[in-house]
Length: 126
Image (cartoon, rainbow, N blue to C red; front, side, top):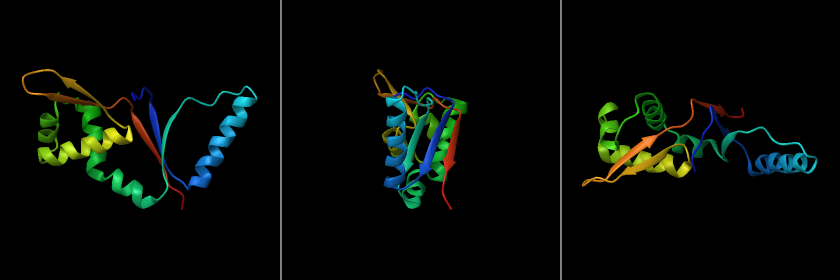
């Protein structure tokens, strides 16, 4: 999935809250009211959010967005981290849907990561 938006919303909310919001969207659609175009992801538990969006992964998102590395190897050098660890983080960020990767067909497979949003808005209830 390719995200083309300015802002991605990350929420920590219960399944009940998530489905309540979805029901409201469907009720509005039945009335002919279109929802705001937005991209959001929900985590049920704060621990899940913290485990997924670690400070190092957030740094990767920022570096990818602003410095546009041409490979995972170049990205790992930019952040002074081990290639293997950066590769694992890239896989997780791709699975969550926060980055897109393109494979360049060269003798040695090159993976180019990209981030297509400018801002993460994080909502955590207290």
